[in-house]
Length: 254
Length: 255
Ligand SMILES: Nc1ncnc2c1ncn2[C@@H]1O[C@H](COP(=O)(O)OP(=O)(O)O)[C@@H](O)[C@H]1O
Ligand SMILES: [Mg+2]
Figure 1 (cartoon, each protein chain N blue to C red):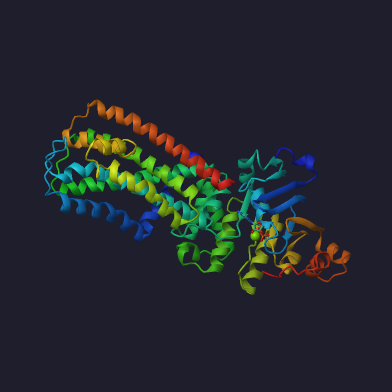
Figure 2 (cartoon, chains in turn cyan, red; figure 1 turned 30 degrees about the horizontal axis):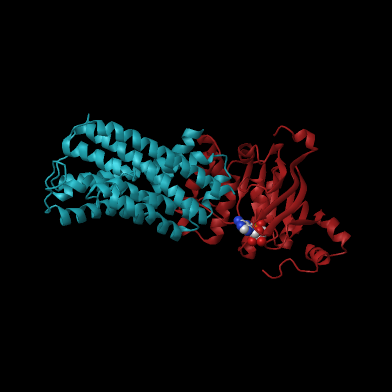
């Protein structure tokens, strides 16, 4: 029963996206707008001092921008869970025999899929604009795995925020607390020396930025950094998503 | 039905000394009650009396501060999933997925109750046709009127064809005609052998529909019995006067 129920709930979350034109346009515009802004601002800036084989600053930051498109979904999840709660829908689902882990799990899966698609839209647009990603199909799959794990982390953070926030206004404000530092440091925007890189290492998306740089900029898929980062990110995502589920459940049933 | 139902003398719900404390408010204060199988049980009391809080504890949404309750022999705390599989709940706040149609909402909740697809199809068709809701059900619920929303809310509670149904203020905010139609619909549930727990602050509703009523005030049970017996005992013509006799206030006062 649980797998079928989970599939039905995932379908509902995806339907929400294409049934509400507003949601769909936000989802498409965000990665497209983000990519274009970075492209026009930074593709003319040469990259002389960063240790990657790319020539302009847009390409250097591209992996971070892809990760940012994923992180952003954390806020979407926090908002949607707060809305479900204030409309009473959450309670309605909770009086059915579906275990909380199943409907929260469906939220994780649906939003993880959306997050990866968003990041791939960024990559696709960058490719149209002239970026030449290395690593081939295997590299793309490996990158998608990193993005999916980051998606799970982002959804977990969204659940933590929704557990604490009283309404969707508070949820969007609180989301900034994790989104802004992750964008500044994890996405390498403000990483320019050892101190800022040390701060960045506390951001889950740093491990995505770093790995995707290796994959897309060098194509060295067997680089030990990739395996190490995959382990680190898996651990982070498990811890955060477990904490998110537990805290959200506790806030709901008190 | 559940494991201990035979031992409970036909009582499908047994509540013992239930308490719910929110910070400084005691919403439910030592409630004990037994509800019989097949009974239409009215849960009457002014706004804020603790009706919704009691229902929420019974259907596993809130953890009681103290006390226990069994539904069909299953403990509401330890066997919550089992309880949830047996009951249908129509919450006070009508909540449906706005971007889905009425039909899609009904089918989704059917599958959340673990029903198989053909069974869902059949049950949803029956419900929708009975309620004269077939056309409306094809539209997205976002455009529904308040009355249509409440009607769908009620149908969702019944989609799994539950033995035990909790209806929390099912007619609140309806006009007189819609209310009467809903009463008929609720009355028919009793003929299907279901146990119905109906909370309301509309006196006439409780009086007209219920086999027995419990009147609660400040989280405490202040009267229990058939509407006729309570009126006779208090030499009253309606339950409002019964409430007035006991508390010195009117039920609808100060809302
Ligand atoms: N989650 C909550 N936190 C704090 N107080 C609550 C909560 N839910 C209900 N209450 C309070 O408990 C009392 C009973 O509320 P409720 O059960 O909704 O009454 P009724 O359904 O009879 O109108 C009210 O005083 C209400 O303000
Ligand atoms: Mg209420």
